[in-house]
Length: 209
Image (cartoon, rainbow, N blue to C red; front, side, top):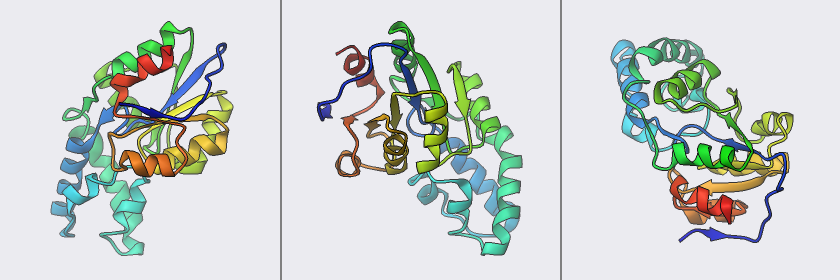
């Protein structure tokens, strides 16, 4: 069952922001494949299963666990070159993603995707899966997500990571957390999420209620 704190959603001019990785899309298969290719090319061992178990922070943050600091920029550049051909097709929308976006539109609202992933790759994912938000902002993590949320007047931000909760709170938006990523419900709640849902399948009902 969803666990919530009392909170109200403004009834008019509603804009809802969504995170991408592990909120709308399960990107783990494609990201794992790309890490494996990068490891094979560079000869640097990368535990790709571990890496995809903690998605959320920027790419460079994860690569710093495997490469010396001086090698991170080149590794990140090569990873991004490999990404379009190897990371898009294996990924799938998470249960409830399509319905969540549709519920916002049915309520007369706008949808916004705000992600730490670079905007080009985020758009490739969304286009491949037929997910069409009204706006997209990439390259933003944690508190920096508030920049796009404020710019678009988002009243709600939905995400799966503690960084998403921080971004929503920094923007003054309602934080709706889904326990589909690396952070369990209890951690999301303790970090200050206003609403905690098992996954996006519960979102339309929550929004309507």
